[in-house]
Length: 213
Image (tube, rainbow, N blue to C red; front, top):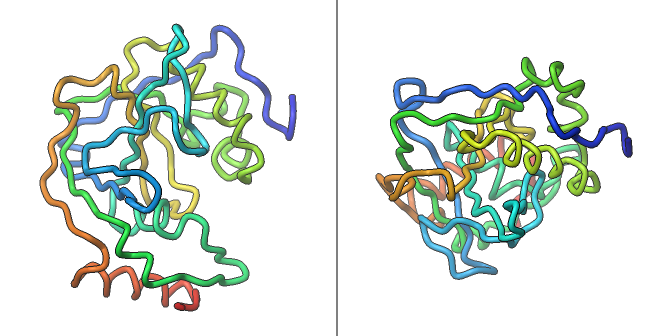
């Protein structure tokens, strides 16, 4: 055990739940063009440094991953404002919005996911504080759990959890190799620098007490 988070064993009692379009019809994704030439349907392929990715398949090739959230506010908190301090309130560079794009999308009619929601973590001997709310220094440890979930649950198409930055929102990290083709349907796409989304993000920033620069 390191940092209070144990390493997963070879046969963890993961909980697999099913999400349908009746549960959530529209999901949201934000991509950024500042460092990668990404588009609305781009899955991360072994790049980035997040709580749950990158992870690998058994043969060592990367699992292609894609984050979605259940609301616009949650996806803004998880992406655009991910590195902005809330306590104490930090700074937000308004001009950075030109790099961010909001995608509204639909997922397959049914989707099986390993649940990392609070109610299912005790079966794994984990708490939300250990897996979801831990700091970025713990990412190498937290990534071991979706890695194990992917390896031990061959029918799982994603992992699901509650957002750390906005606990009212649900999130999924999708596994491209286990999704149908196409894996998702893009309904709408807009740059966050354009109205009315620019105003919506700025109103969220101000409500958090974060200063705009």
